[in-house]
Amino acid sequence: MEAILRLIEEYGLLIVFFNVLIEQAGAPIPAYPILVVTGALHESSGYSPLALVGVAVLGAMIADYGWYLAGRRYGARLLSMLCRISLSPDSCIQQTESIYVRWGAPSLMVAKFIPGFASIASVLAGAVHTRKRSFLLFDIIGATIWSGSAVYLGSLFSTAVDELLEVLVNLGMLGALLLAAALVVFVARKWWQRHRFIKSLCMERVSVQELHDMLQSGNRPVIVDVRSAVAQAEGRIPGAIALRVGEDDFPPLSGDDIIVYCDCPHDASAAAVSKRLMQSGYSRVRPLAGGIEAWLAAGYTIDIEVTEAEGVPA
Image (cartoon, rainbow, N blue to C red):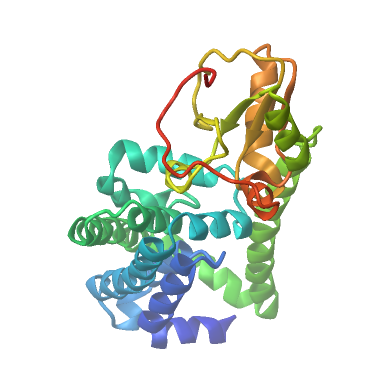
């Protein structure tokens, strides 16, 4: 443990830079605690708080700008991929989109304080073609506030941090093991939350073949698309209407069958909305197994030119 502290004291700026870069790139390795610790040790280590904030902002900007450029190029496909590998619940993209659509680029000023928001917000900013100047301005402000608050807290409570570090040093190898265990518990807790979320959404599905047969027979169900607006802009299943995951009230829907689809792993967002619809009194509601990806893989067409609609399609 003492060796770790010596490394922090000698190479604190490099450690902060790479920790922030890796975290903002998507790895579940929190950088905020390191910023607090280095902020508390800045006097004994010889580097200034401004330098700490500067390297943290640089690391964050490299990662965030990379996500922004990737979002501009790959759009909805990259958002879907992030949803699949995220340890957060699968409705994260829709939640992030609702915040970003409401507040725009200024939401980047608080993005790093919201778990799971930062990298997805950067991708979304690129996907919706936020101006580069606006993105960089608000992202730099957000990274400065985020890293500056951590360094300030470390400096403010330096005595308490020093005492905690002294305890860990006295524990030796046990102290290092405790830190490693804390990281393992953090990742395991995120995984368990995702596992419980997915398990809670077990329910009957309808296959893409069944849905296609319904459409061909004229027994048209109400088809509800709960993907992000960015994804919907690339096309919907014919006749589908848009519905946001975070909406408190659903528009009136009439029909014997309601089919809900998304592009999340395990059809998570579609299942979540289906359960909420059933709780609202709709009896025959089912998610589409595999979502729009399964629909496209089966060779079925989508409507590229779509318009916002509410209620039942004509």
